[in-house]
Image 1 (cartoon, rainbow, N blue to C red):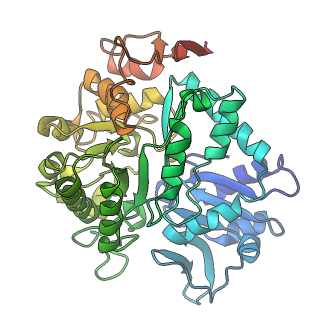
Image 2: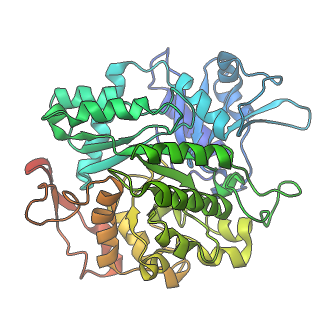
Length: 466
């Protein structure tokens, strides 16, 4: 269950109780979407509130940024997590001043536990959830997705190629899925997927595996994004976040993938993580050239060092951003990074000026799959719900609608390694297209979000009609 926003911890727990009333008796209570920095007061939750709501039922509430889990005591017991448990490297089990677990589990520790949290779901329920989500995507005019590894660890990338394949075989797959499993020393998972999907006519030609995904840092709001200088509001002396894996390990992984012609997408949010990743990709390009399919890509690129935009272009790296992230945490960038560092955040216009190739997306379920909100925020740099701030946040980085559309379509096709057959309406390209009731290139900014998809076509076949 997705639960975006919410005024405070108590309100979200009450909504969760209403949701849980309709669940099977054997089901965990699992939700996603809470953001404590948008609450009043903006304080982290603890297990106490959900212990009171669910004393005998495991409850796991995944944060909106998908980097933190909030558990009740029953869930911690089911998972075998105690005050003496040691978290995996790059993760943490938060404790209070008495050394007791608060119920908050972060980064690698949260990602390691998530597969067990969802273990009660049957294949049938999962397939139906995928089909339902694809129907919502078709309504938003989405014909292709990039499904990227959620976990940095072996064996739990959360890419359900089996589900996509089953839906394709049943004729229920209504989009093109491009899968990016976890980048590991063992590259066989990707290569086996590529071999299956390369067979003529396999799965209706709707499935691809263009490359790998890996995490390099966390998120600024939780102080886990990796910075060159400490956060402006440090949680402890020298607080500058951390890398999820050592830089030399990432370098070895990327170079090994590049040697075999594989593209890599790396989650990088903090300026230090971005800088290090650009350096690694530059070395990969110099030694092995371009990937055989797909593009080496950085995901998110929230705050950057001066000079790294030019370095990004020189390394031939594609910048993949999610415009709706800009206003997820009003005042947060200034609070966490200070006034100087926020001057180079989500720099879409600067990327254009330097010739950096870009792609847009939603990072769902971090933000909802609402295509018009992506375009609205890219053009206005205003929140898609409140429409603040007036004039846009860092208005110098606003971009014209024509560029936003090109980045969201042709740019995203390039990120999937499909720029020669997707993302444009032209002879020889696949007939994936959308009919809108507005001309987005001429309508007023305040009308962008009211534009409705009238029909969505995949390979010339209508998969949605209003």
